[in-house]
Image (cartoon, rainbow, N blue to C red; front, top):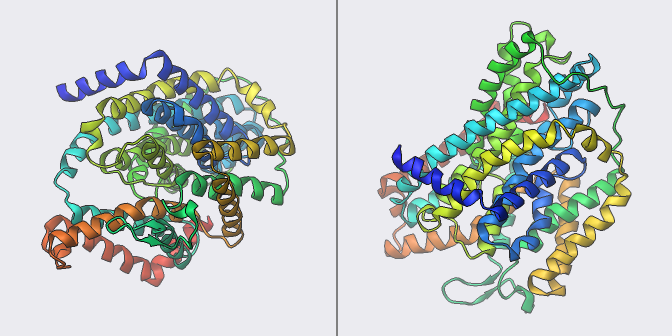
Length: 500
């Protein structure tokens, strides 16, 4: 307990410096803006801003990027409730009862429940992150190359299971990401692989062009191709205070949503969107009057909004303790760490304690900022929705390409970004989720390195993966997941869940 308090004291000391406070506020503001504006999202925005963080100290850059992620969960609820227009995918489910409450004259109460529920869930998730980080990192010190390899395989398989779309397509995305990760010089011999004689590929594909193309440029192209989003009539906000009956219904829903979100956020492939849908389903299943859902049930707002914020923050647990990204946003965070010369993995907490605990402390500070930002400034955020997308996308696209060029002053990387933008748009048309591809691209080189290291230490004997207890346990989990997904009943349930 004393050690945890010492860590938190170190974290708050780092997070409360003027520079980090300023960029935490900037991240929260950008995240709220991203959540409010349809057609953008935290993945695309973080991809766009990666080059801009290159000149910042590592802890400051990660604090701002984290603020964008969990800030988007707050902002997405505002337009979902008032306009039935989710600014962020995790707020899609909030449209159902949130907008129904607004049509019933309770928009202010719905916004307050969403904001306070998110703040409470964020606080719970931050405490869980603080409590689990050190023990998990200490336990991970026992992991050798064989265990790390199997852990990454488990993460990729779990990402396939939880990814949207058919299982075969998700698996194809993983294989494509692993293939892209092999481009460049061999880690042992230095032999060039898949470079086709192009100098720009000699050091491998850069993370920024791949991430910004697949998510940033592809998002813009998809929005232009799909036409501008149009919202409905803005409902009157009214009083911000919920009634006693609404509060009594909201409190247990917030508690359950925080627990569901915190647990699902830790899983590889999980995160805010999955957490919000599961929390809503749980509330509907246990409700005494399920028929109220869809007509303005407070629990239908409180649970998913609490779950998406908790899920967003606990997804940092596997990243900070094991170096394993749980979703596409965490893959972006891995890329940001690598850009700043930080090797993600179990040793980060010991080697960079100020960075890790500064991020943890900043999350609680950021959640407090977001409550203040969202409730008093609701009117401003809603007005931003009226800005036509045709005025936004040229500036965003120019910002993307200038950012890519500024990293290495390479016009070839700008061309690569455009090519991956076309690929990302094509994947959307083919209904393939690009998130597993990015996860595999990030983990691929580490996967290969640990596989080779494990076999080298075992003198080429593949039995090392079943002789070591932890590696064997992780291998068993991989086999169970693969067999479970192969079962027709499980595949049907998975398809129904994603269809809903």
